[in-house]
Length: 237
Image 1 (cartoon, one colour):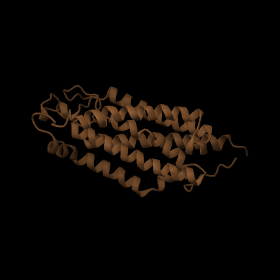
Image 2 (tube, helix red, strand yellow; image 1 turned 135 degrees about the vertical axis):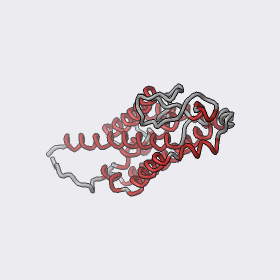
Image 3 (tube, rainbow, N blue to C red; image 1 turned 90 degrees about the vertical axis):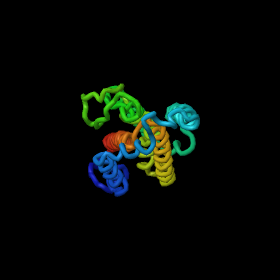
Image 4 (cartoon, one colour; image 1 turned 180 degrees about the vertical axis):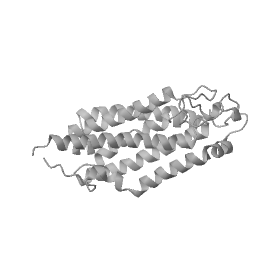
């Protein structure tokens, strides 16, 4: 077995992507400067958020789109056992790693939301609610509202699929790696769209979407790395 550890290995590609680290820095700066409040103030008023119940946002881009992604999640499970298209280029182990990462991302986001004391912007006092907004990193402190708003569950419905993109990008097949990169951009675009929808409705400030993206990307990447290490360990010497 070859135990050489090298940053040139495909599954460590994210460590060599300045764009990813720049995005993380942007997220940290955005969070530190409290820019959420400026964005939400430009959208909401003392009467709340005018677009909260807009049919396009609340029904089409929230309810219906979430249902579509649920179907895609179920389809991803089917592809584990009956691969079609680009999934044929992934081994069964890789397909299991991918779906495990997607499921782990969804579970982690759901768990964090369950125990989060952070309330949504539409529950803030500024917009007619009862909550006094505090940092979502202030664990254990109540803001006076219902809580359970961080991270962004809606955006995670798309961003959780980053695990599949990471696994595909670590493939030895050029066509599968290319498909994985394209899938990554689609996932990012979908996550941004769903995050913007929730911001316009007053459900989540932008930082919630930014951190949700990083949570899902990190979980998916860790799962992909673990799968690669397991495969290398199991390989004959």
